[in-house]
Length: 415
Image 1 (cartoon, one colour):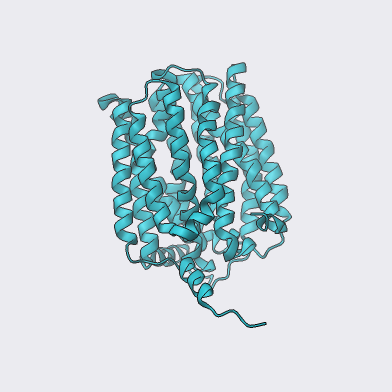
Image 2 (image 1 turned 45 degrees about the horizontal axis):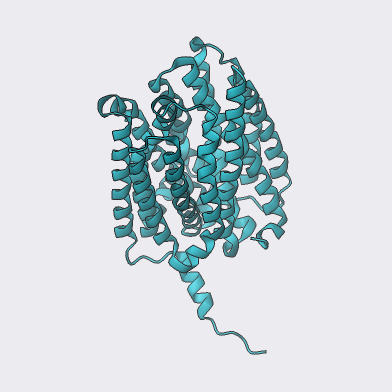
């Protein structure tokens, strides 16, 4: 990790990510709390979550194709610039009759983000190289966790001290500006290394990306395991706030405590994720991570006190970080630079599609079988996803592991 931060461009990219993670956490919770406060409706909370998730489903494939055509650094800069302006529009949402503004702006914000995320993921291998990629992805997870915790805690404090969440949106706007400046100083070449003609249609580019995914058993396993898992976890994303606020009946300030419980284990897991991957392999970490999450989510259906939820979230953290870092590394290393944007976006689109479907039925399921039973069903679905991923990965060896094995087998030159 020390070697990683000696890379100047990575330090700049990390700075941009850190402040963005802080800002994203501010707005993500602020939007859900604003919706809950103004409407008191689970369906409205679900609508907000869907407005945030839907753009990836609608535009993910297209965004990834353009990321493989355009300068990736410029894509990130322009995305930050526009999001700086749009996030301030949330300040207008002060009454229930203005909720439509929140839905529309959240949709636009997320649409801009569909370009930023695949550009950053595709750019990362160019900045750190294959040797540091797993460590870089692990640090990215750690950064997201720590600064997400800080952002969540700040939002909780703002919510407990004020009738509005305006300060959270203003702070988020400033983080986009800081990220923009940091990324603009990165020097690494950000132009995609394309082999196919750039004058082909955007749909032809998308088709190429899908064919790459279809041709890789490793990536099909990632898509299958993570996609099925999200069919269950999407409902959890919608119903966690109502479970905490309405079922457990605890103060909004508890959100910082819940986040802290998870962040401790996630940071610890991020610190050892690269070592775990070298010892056990990325595919095994993915299967173990999905399995652990499934058990933990099912256990959430039984919580009777906030402290029990604290313990469960602490255990979840040990599964999430290695899982996410392994997925990111495989997506970045199983394909060539020319198609990284498309394959990364395709994965995000599939996961988001599963997430949206799950969220869309969350309110109906909760009304029919109860919030707690939805958590139980979600956990069972995740357990099934672990089994599917394990069967797909059996006998398949990722490129990065083959390269590491080949390097270890090379004879050492005599002095």
